[in-house]
Image (cartoon, rainbow, N blue to C red):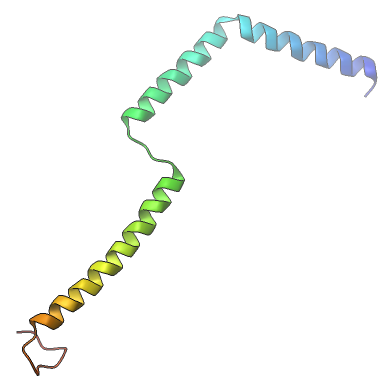
Length: 87
């Protein structure tokens, strides 16, 4: 591309940027972002990283509960009873 075309495109981009900055579209965009932000806060959404962290935590808690259930079952068994029998 020649320098004249590059200059023309850069000038067009600068004018469009300035036009958007000074137009009502800028206000609408800003207000829309604020509205969406408030809505998302009320929905109590979490990020993907937070969600993945909760999934990992839930998995480890499930494993701990299963182990505790086994321990309780072993303690509830009468002395000398096989592991598969329940009182």
